[in-house]
Image (cartoon, rainbow, N blue to C red):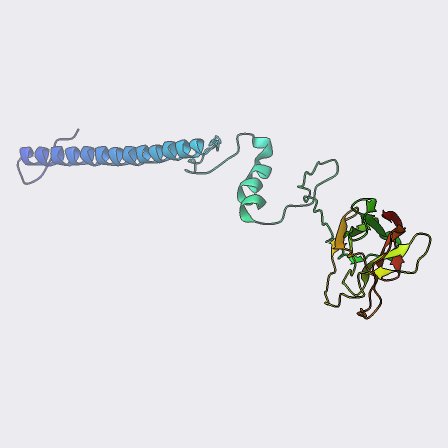
Length: 257
């Protein structure tokens, strides 16, 4: 090193040179410290980003390059599928976004929930009037023999002999119990001759169901319009018949003694 020259003493120049040397060394140290701090901060950011991506299930890798690594760049673990992985990360899932699913490809299996079958039962049709061929009339008497002057109990039974429910008008003007001589159909007495009270009776009967109507016969004759001249029926063989409109039952015999 050359000896300093100048108008001042040499010691002054040596002190100035020492100060300049120390200042340059301090400046270099400050630059080194600042560069180290920057590199340490970048490394910490890279590590924290990698940890967060790893916790989210994404692999963070860095490619060797002469350029400084880009902090926070997401790369797939398999370099051969980088393009497909990038597109799958960029495109939102149709299940999450609400978009319609693409049609299934050949050979794919699609399971769809089949609609639950609905069974509709038609309401039953309303009952119709019982036709004559399903109406069964039966005439009965409480006991097979009575003494003259007693009041035999006569009963008419109407049965629905069809396969479905039906209704039938059995009002008083349509129904009657009649007493006839045995072997004849000319009535000596009818329950409708002297009973003029109207009624409206239209029962609905299930298959096999019956309705019945009873009356006590006084043992005397009658005629339509109920004339006052009525006589006692003598001892003999008789029968009771049930009638409903045009229908008539088989005669049921009994005896007056």
